[in-house]
Amino acid sequence: MKNSAPIFGLLLLLLCVRPAGAQTPEAVADRADSSAAAPPVAAPTPASFLARADSLRHAYAFARAVEACGEGLALRPDSLTEQALSEEKMLAQNGLNMLGYCSQPVVVARERFSLEDFFLYYPLEDRAWHPLPNALDSLSRGFPWAMYIPRKADELYYSAWDEDGIRNLYHSVWRDSVWAVPALLGEHLTSDDDEIFPMVSPDGRSLYFASSGLYGMGGYDLYVSRWNSSTHQWDVPVNLGFPYSSPYDDFLFVNTADGRHSIFASNRECSRDSVWVYVLEYDSMPVRKALEEGDPVRNLARLLPAGSASSPAAPALVPENQDIRRYMDKMALVRSLRDAIYDQGKSIDALRARLAQAPESARADIAADIVRQEAALPVLQDSLSAAVSALQAIEMEFLTSGVVIDPEQVEKEADREEAAPAYHFERRTLGPALRMKVLRPKPVFDYSFKILPQGRFAEDNTLPSGLVYQIQILSSSSKVTVGQLKGLSPVFQRMSPSLRYTCTVGIFRTYDDVLAHLNKVKKAGFRSAFIVAWMDGESVTVAKARELEQTVRYSYQIRIAPEAPLTESEIITIHALTRSDLSRSQENGQPVYFLGPYDDRVEADRLLSSLKAAGISGASLERR
Image (cartoon, rainbow, N blue to C red; front, side, top):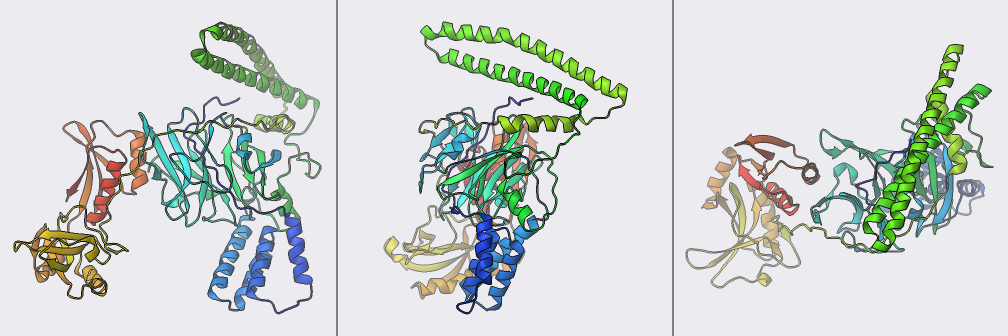
């Protein structure tokens, strides 16, 4: 039966994937083998072994790719080639490991589409793909991008470039009239390379995405992370494994809302400007088995639909006979009637939505359509009841005559027979340019010691509580300018009792830390710089500070006292900003939450600023 629940909280950012060319694995393997068999024209080099290993890996010959990398490393290459060989060897070894746990998905259909609009052929909400740029990502390279944002979404999951040019996964929630400050999803879902195409399952418990930086066999691999209701975080992602992931680029994995299919795209075996979109039977508990390298692996990687000319016929799940056929036919009737009732309900809902916005001249015709379709529902429901009764009667016949059947297997067989020839790709319409209001985090001044192209004065000259060391750089009768700082940051400028401007730099919590930075300050041009110390904002001698350092230890916690209990979306936002435990208490009958403790005041201050920027009200810092 179809699942009528809408897909909420989904946002996909399209980007240019890495082209693989129109080379088939067989052609790549032949080229690698013939290259190895041809008489050498020159002594082999580490670079030639690297090229051969890459070709073998893309031909799914992982063991030979590992060997080629080993031979290249044995020649003691330069550091860059050694690193490339090591990485190539790791990818090939990962591929070899994954062959021990291969899924055997039933392929319903596949079709090649242009890289520019393949996403419009997914069975997702119409006009929900919106072109970029927009408020979430203003960058554009290579070909038109789009974001998938369902009309009633109250959560967004999307991919965007960070300041270092790496794609990360972000999350935002709807707050009355504005989207909250986007937050990174978490440490486990971030690598030193790109993460793209996040898609949340219809039940909201699984997050699918592609990554080129996590454990994989090369290119973009597919991953799933499960929602942990205890920690309110996404768990460590798991590679979907072969053949979903391959040495090529595999991305944009979704499970359809009706629970029938899994769909993803890949640029394996296609030209640079196109991708395959594969439709598979949904399998909640796939059976995995080991495969030997060679034709079985390459054939599985092609993901040909069952029954196609190049695909072996899938074995029947149940033995065929007249009684079973009668049972399957009746089951197919039950399923088709359920689907018809589902489709009729969706059609009525769509008509009601049109009626609410239609001009007065069209309302009568739409209302008449609604009445006509509603009148047809009882007929369909009666037919369904009769079909279910007939199905149960057949089951009783089987039970009386001693025939044992597995309804789940029969239903899967019926699914396969029904879905294989019936799936059709339909093109959705691209939605309009998107206008959305997204909160931005307020810039937080960085109080960590730095030497920059241009020095910076501290935004606030108030020193944090507790024991603090600084480096005094100069004292002047006139106010010091930025040009005199020689790139140091943060510099605190105060008026001394003798009416002179004194400048100190940095916030250091230990004597060893400040001492390690003293020479850096002197080399920057302040040869007379020296260490000073403060305790709760009051000047103390360095000797006294070092004594206190051995006895005084402060810790800090963040107290959140909202006017109302934190909502689930606010809790998710907090967990996205910190891995610290969030504890709850009661004060005067009102909920109070605590984060921490933190030994580092600077760390606690930064988190407090991030919480306030994310719209978490009632947050303050306490010393323990």
